[in-house]
Amino acid sequence: MPPYRQIGSLPRKRHIAHRHEPGYRNEGIYYEEVLTTAGFGRAYSIVYHLRPPTRVRKVEAAGQTALDFAEEPTLRHHHLHSGHMPAAGDPIRGRVPLLGNADVTIARCRPTEPQAELYRNAAADEVLFIHKGRGTLSSMFGVLPFKPYDYVVIPRCITYRLDFETDVPPDLLVIEATHNVVIPPRYLNPDGQLRLGAPYSERDLHGPRELLVLDREEDVPVLIKDGCRWTRYVLAQHPFDVVGWDGFVYPFTFNADDFEPITGTVHQPPPVQQTFEASGFVLCTFAPRMLDTHPEAIKVPYAHSNVQADEVLYYVRGRFGSRRGVAEGSITLHPRGIPHGPHPGTIVASRTMTHTDELAVMIDTVQPLRLTRQALAMDDPNYPYSWLE
Picture (cartoon, rainbow, N blue to C red):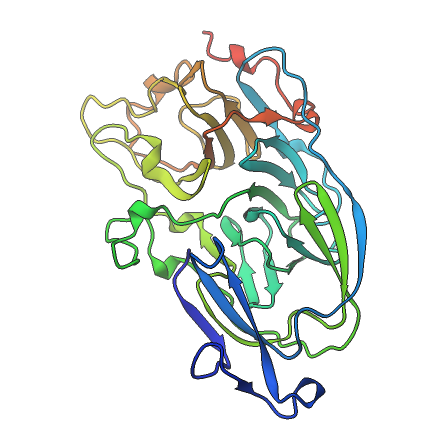
């Protein structure tokens, strides 16, 4: 989880009356809500509302969206040209799932419409990688600005709204995690602080800046996703009525360009690029960096057989030294059981290089990933043969 934060008005102690006169129905208090993880055993936040957050006027079904997985008769590598995916929909309903398993779903979103209604994912943490576009995420925790190459980490059960500036069409990679998305534990010292030598620090993690405190007694629809099931709640007031909060559970951003790569005399394995993790997968950032310095170093990754992991790469920016034929928005899937490696010619081409300007997001999963029918429509069937001379 990110570091402790507090914003706004808080009482002296937890779970005591936070006085406010006259208050809702003249009760004279702000209303405490505690957001906990792992039952009551892990990180939590406490927020204070103008009105009780439990006031619901209507609950209605809003549809089902089961993932449409494709039948795959062969085990092979895939190259998905998602950069050519047509733009459509809003930032929530416009998401196109491409890969998934029980632990993670990977989608692309290129919205053309503003978000239609407030949204909450009740069953998954979300990580939005902002490839293009900038704007704000609004929630009861306040306003969180985001910009290109930000990871926007949104813990489950946070109601939010995305608003994009209109100068650049938004382009997102969307990751849904069944389990909590956390900072890799090995980056933390026993006191919970990011270690010296970790590839980022607390200064690189940015939380909401200011509260909204929307005092509105009105019907507010909220679209809730619970796995494949969608529900619409109509609340009796606006949920962004929080006057103060503190804790460790809140949305935050981390920019990929703030990742501090770890390099060596010879090629370092992908775990040194790890950025976040959740049970069942890790998320890594291949950021611009100096290349290996040994006089005989091979400066592109060695051939690799994934024995117990599927590897997904999303190509963001720059020239990827070990690959030919990929472009911005390309997604490659290198599944377990078969080797992959640098394309012919890339080893020789890298000999005189001293640094790389590539930026890419990698997701390695424990369980095999399945492709959706939407993904197969973007797939290059000749990609498995791209290592031939």
